[in-house]
Length: 201
Image 1 (spheres, helix red, strand yellow):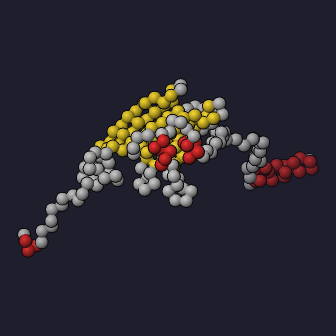
Image 2 (tube, helix red, strand yellow):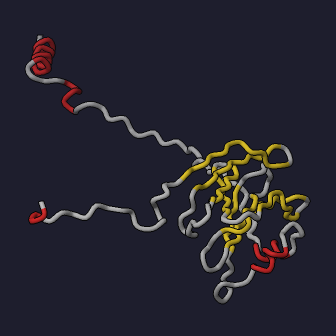
Image 3 (cartoon, rainbow, N blue to C red):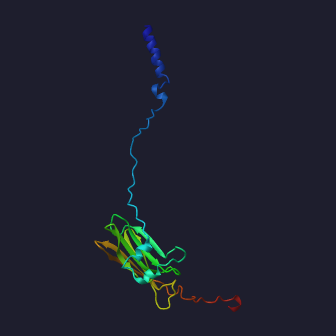
């Protein structure tokens, strides 16, 4: 009987307000750590930096007129811009070189070189006035200003933008856009009516 009484007291204690193991709160799961290797970014091969002036001077496709203009504008600063990027699908980034005038920075020639047999080969040449080349998402974009008679240098009448893609062993034209500019910009003052004073009304 004493044993039954003790069991009854224990059972009553568990049923009057006690919540058993739930008094301790919800179980917290320990964080699981995994040894996951960090992702490695794929890197494109580094561009070979070139001496653009030397490259142009030794290129037989560059005219003597352009070579004569390859002179420093100030100290060792040549009027040459160089860009590196993928244009021809090679394993080494291609090189785009723009040659400009010193005084007005007007483009007078643009060239594209790709690596063939471990040498840079000229694969595109244009020596038209007011020309500039750029790399845009793997394509060659040539912009050429168009001047009409009497146009000041800073305000051409239009521009033509031609996009080229590399197709096998040469550049082929894909798109051509012509932008005509307003003749009122840069061609003298625009005629504006003189404001009328209150006494003249």
